Amino acid sequence: MKILDSVAPLAEDHDGFILDIWGVLHDGEKPYPGVVEALRELRARGKRVVLLSNAPRRSWTVAKALEDMGLPPELFDGVVTSGEVAWTLLRDRTHPFFAKLGRTAFHIGPDRDLSVIEALDIPVSRDAAAADFVLNTGPDFEHGRLSTDPYRPMLEAAAARRLPMVCTNPDRAVMVGGERLICAGAFADIYMELGGEVMEIGKPDPMVYETVLSALAVPKDRIVAVGDTAHTDLAGAMAVGVAPVWALTGLAGDHFGPDPSPDALDEEAAREGVQPVAALRSLRW
Image (cartoon, rainbow, N blue to C red; front, side):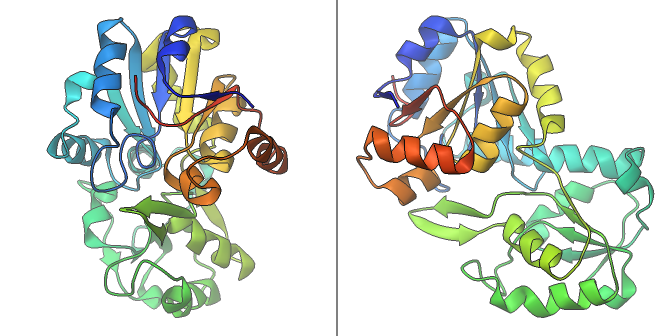
């Protein structure tokens, strides 16, 4: 696999960029070195840039966090999150899975993620016995973010009542400040093992790319998607016919180390069933 040291060669052949956020733009606490400069260079060359994240919150909350981190809105054309897509589905109730959900949610996750149901008539309960479905946004701070073990009793209680689960972040893990933390997808795995019904909203589902592709307004053969996770970012890009590029930061950096060999990347890509057109050491110009 070809490993690029800069995003510049990709800009020669592509006009639209779909960028993951956590693990590509920043480490959960601050932007990676060179990211702001790279985005400014892309914008200066007229490239379209849309950020696509499996964040379980609405897009406006992520955009604000990025601005607070030093990534202002003029660096990209838009932000789309799995939480925003989930909010729309919960509002409209036209999708078959969402049409059958009741009103009260058993929320597993921190209160900061409740923007995913803001302005919707969805009461929240911390008791599975009083709920109609599970709203899984990921780990909270009370039970910890390193292990799924403290959450198993909650998942078992919900599964015993056969509550359907809405998982607003299919990621299994994320790197934050160099530490590997669990995400909502790890709970979804356990819930399915318990026999529960799960709807995951986010990459790699092609549905979450619809808004992104519309915002880019660029032919697919001129679009590249950069992400650090094979089974979400790369698989999702392939599912919609966009060239995937493997960012070697974030989870990929944690897995492969600072200087992976092209052969190691090829072997892992084959195991994951993806075919990235290249790997990118980091998003820098």
